[in-house]
Length: 68
Image (cartoon, rainbow, N blue to C red; front, top):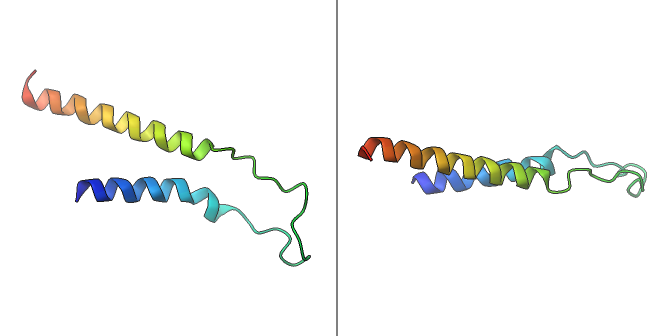
């Protein structure tokens, strides 16, 4: 169950930039050539860093609980 929640959180975090982007040009018939998203995969990089950091903190907590 815990893994499912983690996977859903990662999917949610990585899909937020897609939902937040405004659709420009739908009224004018085409996209504006200057309207290029500047994200460049930054959200994926942030999500990977958060997952890596969370995993590291989880492992440190597990070591403390085991007493090693």
